[in-house]
Length: 404
Image (cartoon, rainbow, N blue to C red):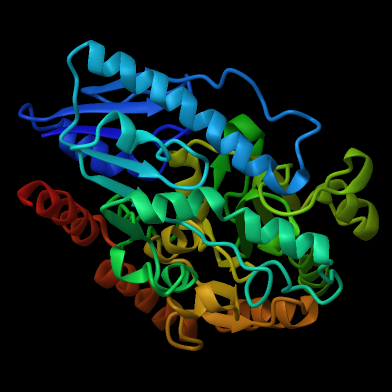
């Protein structure tokens, strides 16, 4: 099989599938990307570069579409070069939304196109209007509707789609849902295993929590309202006041990955630290971590807090469950697809720091009784999200298209 992956990041969602295909010498795996860093064994990485950014005077509603078209042009040029060098893929698998897959059918018309469909935007009923303190304007509604333009082109053009969860699948227009299979990327359950009694030592960050009995953890790409960072910080201020030995560990970058930035360049981390004035000897910010250090955080966690708006479900929640974490998680739609309250985790009101703090303390006070939830959490991942189950299903989609 000759397969072309497309993603501006590398290797992103395709890391395990690309690695598995590249391990077979009968396959040739090419990955088109904009990210210089990183490599995978036997995966030939090809770079594409946008020739410009969207123009400042482009209508704000269609700037995302212009950006996607510019990226699609860059991929078109890259694909033309590949064809001139003799590489014509049997199948293309790309991430929809940013533009890399929009024109690929015009370069390789005979190659089936599989698109990874992560999210379809709605002004009402999901993430955008979730916070009642941030009502949408007509301008917001128009901008959000038009943000789907590149995705709609891919929904029309692709031969098959894959979406990672039922919740995310349901966001796509009903007329296109039959084209999309629900298959998660897969969690490495062999690597992310529970390790009771694991100490948390991060020498690069100067963190040594050896012997600490209460460690509450939080993981996100950024520190932002979409992942409940303000509510988490307020809840942890309450927990730290009630429990003088409790340590808090926050993994992630001081940035906004989703949603609105604060004015004048202020970060949500700085905002919450100024507001709460917490005990910094017990509050530890690690920044982004290498995967083996991140695993150590999960394995040492006493309670792991995961909060999200009704949006894309984070890998980190499923990875925490695989590592046997005791989860306190937001009672929102993407979380409820996986966690059942009192069975494999504890659900809580996203907007209530007091209730989040109460559930964290409840979990810390009832370790023995909560052990069942930890075991059930890992079993949920083994049954539904393990790589050994997800990768064969992804492969069957690809092979089925090739057989046709």
